[in-house]
Amino acid sequence: MNLIDKKTVKKLAELARMDINPREEESLVSDLERILEYFDELKELDTKNVLPMSGGTFLENIVRDDGKGERLPGEKSVDQFPEKERGFLKVPPVFE
Amino acid sequence: MKNIHELTIKSFHEGLLGKKFSAFEITKGYFDWIDEKDKEIGAYLSLQKDEALKAASVVDAKVASGEEVDVLAGVPMAIKDVILIEGAPATAGSKILENYRASYDATVVKKLKEVNAVFLGKTNLDEFAMGSSNENSSYKLVHNPYDLSRVPGGSSGGSAAAVAANMALVSLGSDTGGSIREPAAFCGVVGLKPTYGAVSRHGLIALASSLDQIGPLAKTVEDAAIVFNRIRGRDEMDSTSVETEENGFLEPKLDYLKKLRIGIPKEYFAGGLSHEVEKGMAEAERKLRSLKLEFKEISMPHTKYALSVYYIILPAEASANLARFDGIRYTRIQNSKFKIQNLRDIYFKTRGNGFGAEPRRRILLGTFVLSAGYYDAYYAKAQKVRRLILQDFDEAFRKVDVIFAPTTPDVAFKLGEKTADPIQMYLSDIFTIPANLAGVPAVSIPVKKYSLADKELPVGFQLIGKHFREADILGLGQYYEKA
Image (tube, rainbow over all chains, first blue to last red; front, side, top):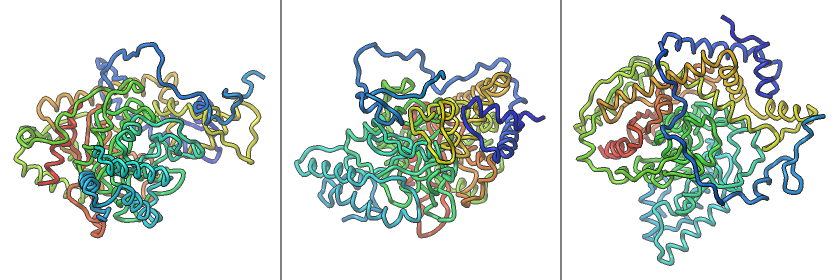
């Protein structure tokens, strides 16, 4: 069973918005294939009537009151952006 | 001045109040030792010398004026470089955050600053806390203080090695699948992963949000308990955090602890342990039995599936969490080797060149298990088996109060030994992962007091407790150390 080939790796990289070096494609294919094979052991478990566990906590609906709170001051919140202008995040055009 | 190698939090505090030394002298002493020692260890990625000495002076002034100070006041700590200290670097061990400076304090840091703890610096780690050997750091290796040719464990390898080599009195790490406990075991120190929700993760660079917890690494269980007590509690900035009480972990009572039933899960001992670990576990069990506790064999039948479940859930969550490193909000990778012409280039070049091999592998794996057509077979299936693993714990905790288990299958391995084979590397965490999946607290404790001079490689064992019963595992641990 081959779930992963070079085409899949390229498609995943496209979805993840991440360049992949053509030289590492082969090792990524074999690593991912081996890891997915390892996961096959899960198939032997019958989980038909098991509820998925979707998080680490048993809390529900944690909300806080709307209101004024402590926030990062403006200059601190933009300080680390790679491009900024007049206190705003600067991004290149999305539509060209 | 007292030798910094012998200090514990309480002996430091007593010495400070008794004017045997000043916080400034001790902090300076730690930096002198780091300058000498860390060249061969590699535990620190950055030091905060000026800030630390200033913070120590504040403590000295308070003590001089007779003001009451906290037991952690002046205590020199190391902080894993995924936890934010305002103004300090927070690289997460990645080139993609090389020039980043934290804009705010993590809640745990804020809490420790309030009691005047001193932060020596930020410690080395596997990139984005992904790894079991610290070899995935994009900056440098960490060497195990017990044998420089071996790994310190990971991902909190720097935090463990710093404490083991006396380059910090205590440290903070983060544990998603064993990242505090595995390096603690390899480096002969104590490492606590608290209950999921016990400690706020606000200001922790997220790896897998349903698993991550911050916790202490320390020389003694008591030190770990003292730090845990200061960082725990509900925080509005982390909606999974819960308010808790000091329920007996600071001053454990032996008559209570003697009533605890200890479970030995047969699946954790069913072969696969190295000779050294097997020997260490026998010694730990003998010592625990000398406390006259009741022992029971138990079964946790889904244990063997934990690794698969973890390596589906973790990459899925990590691929989502790491989406924020897009070259727009954080560092943009620029390079003369490629041209950036548009928004697409910023995303692809920054992420392709900024992330190392392991994060890239896990991002692709996470993208795969979440993608249309495979979601049910992998991610949904893993969530269901995760519940079965939780039910194993629930079932076990009806019969026993604390579970006794090895922390790792083997002692610290050689640098480079497992880097070529991701599955071999992943198997290092096979005994620590289940506690994260179930959200229960677990502490790794050295089997005995190891000495760096002896060169014997440390073995750690785990005590795993019920949700929010840190008091049971830390209490037993404190008596174990005295036994």
